[in-house]
Image 1 (tube, rainbow, N blue to C red):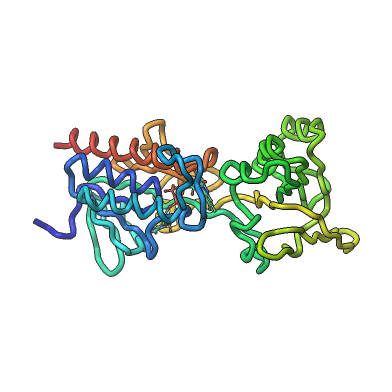
Image 2: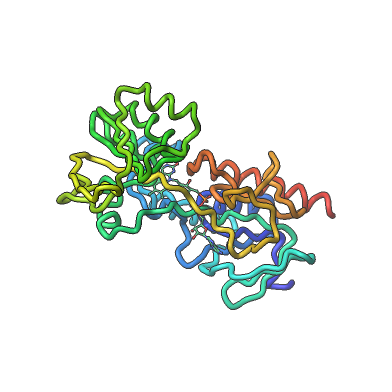
Length: 308
Ligand SMILES: Cc1cc2nc3c(=O)[nH]c(=O)nc-3n(C[C@H](O)[C@H](O)[C@H](O)COP(=O)(O)OP(=O)(O)OC[C@H]3O[C@@H](n4cnc5c(N)ncnc54)[C@H](O)[C@@H]3O)c2cc1C
């Protein structure tokens, strides 16, 4: 047996990649996961998760991911703590550089996720998970009856602001320009919602508080004037970057850089599938990532079966 050949290789060990690995391993094929330096994905960055089914009490992100890694390993998947740093998808089997090794595979599942864009302020990092979040769907529920801000001016920021009015007493939408980029219909909804106040021409300057976030200092970009907004949470909604650099231009991407797939997770190259946040600009949720990971692995297994 060629130790360096796998029927399925999964790139990325977040919820999508690990679910794909679980299904691939249970499908009876030799499967490896290029899991990066710290397998687990974005959920390693968070504390309590309340919306992943099967956990009546909150489960922490790291705990959930350790369980998924254990499950994939127990079923026989090799979870490698190595980065995928290069690939040749032009010939079969596909050749991947994983750590210092050249591995080959018959089918590839890409589950390299996406990274939320942050403002880059030191105080923003300090208050992450203590009032600063990149995910309204994930964390909005924790701020019932509070004053919340959303930073951004596009569709995601507008949707987040509208969503957060379900919980918040008031939502401040902070945008650096004097008009929003969000779709017209969303702007109409924002303006019609009495809980939303749009703070135009302002940028966050410093997140303030003790143990948790208590206020945000913002600066008017036109006048230079500064003010402090008392609030309990700030949601940063300035975009995400899908992690696709290693694939270069080999695969079809949309305008936002997300991998384009059909309804069955197939990419533009036969035998290459994508799952999770790397192909999903809409939901960006662990359960959806896991769901598409399952789909991608099942499709990869079908593909291998048909080639026999
Ligand atoms: C702070 C925070 C809180 C969140 N809370 C929730 C929540 O409560 N509920 C919920 O459902 N969702 C939540 N999410 C969203 C959720 O984490 C994502 O939707 C989910 O993790 C996406 O899974 P994924 O497997 O597609 O990608 P990811 O989790 O991003 O995993 C991809 C992995 O691939 C790795 N990778 C990238 N490139 C390479 C490479 N070249 N080689 C090897 N590995 C590579 C990455 O480093 C990463 O480890 C939260 C996200 C954040 C950031």
